[in-house]
Amino acid sequence: MLAADGIVQLAADEPLALRTSGPAGFGCMSLPSEEIHVVGCDLTASRQQLMYAPPADTMATLRRLHSAAGRLAAEFPEALAHPEVARGVEQALVEGMIACLDANCAADESLSSHRQRAVMKRFYRLLEAHPDRSWYLMEMAKAVGASVRSLSNCCQNHLGMGAKQYLALRRMHLARRALRLAGSQLVSVTEVATQYGFWEFGRFAGNYKLLFGELPSETLRRGPTSAAQAVGRQ
Image (cartoon, rainbow, N blue to C red; front, top):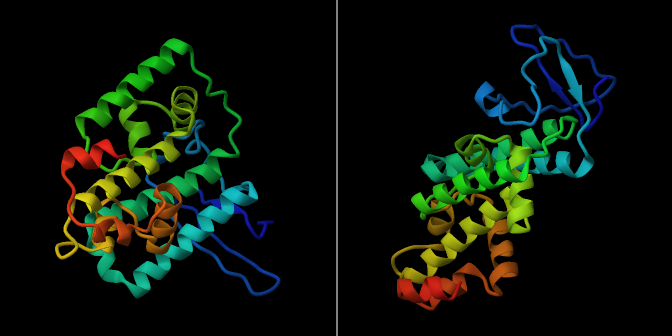
């Protein structure tokens, strides 16, 4: 029996029949196998239908993201035409689903200090080689050759925060720099947010204010700032 906040992983090429005792709703996602491989355990080995019971907060995040993506597609389909928005939505949903599936894995993902340093060296090199790119957790894990859990543990040990939090914070700083460098007559907050993959615009504004003490529109209204000043004040 699938719980109200459960997830069922369908077996490949197998029919699915569902019976409910009352009104029910379902959301569906399809993940390419290369995304699942960066989880800390093998979720592709089973040829049976599997059921998962993720932690309530992790599942709530996935449901919120799934619902927000549906609203965006229905109410602002033109936003999804922006490559960075489409990429941001996709990566957010993949990260949310993988977090739910990964919570059911008990694999030991601890790495030696030597291995952690090697992972972080590749991590820093990628950030330096692409200073203006919006990186996401799944992309970075594949790029450095580590599982999501391993990369998150490495970042927690070396940076004091998980990889997902660090990369989101970095994108927020990139957006702030763009707002400082822009003229209010040239771009809008929405354009800058979408440029860095932020597609929940209300949440972006709220998180921005918590982090920087002002709304993104207030940053934009102050007018252009030199690149040196923008970087120096971060």
